[in-house]
Image (cartoon, rainbow, N blue to C red; front, side):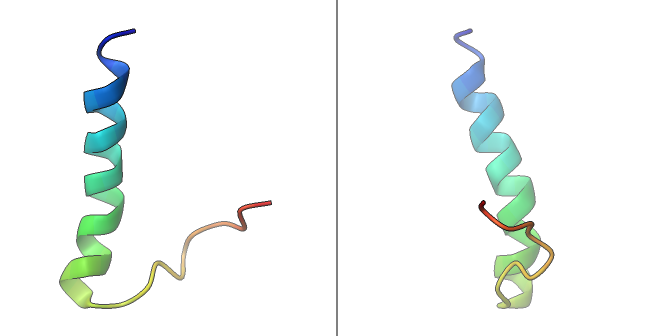
Length: 33
């Protein structure tokens, strides 16, 4: 599972990149519950 770290980081980038680019908070994020 050594590829888990880069994969998670990549997913985070893909998820936060559009938000940062739009300078808006991730409103389409589901509740953290």
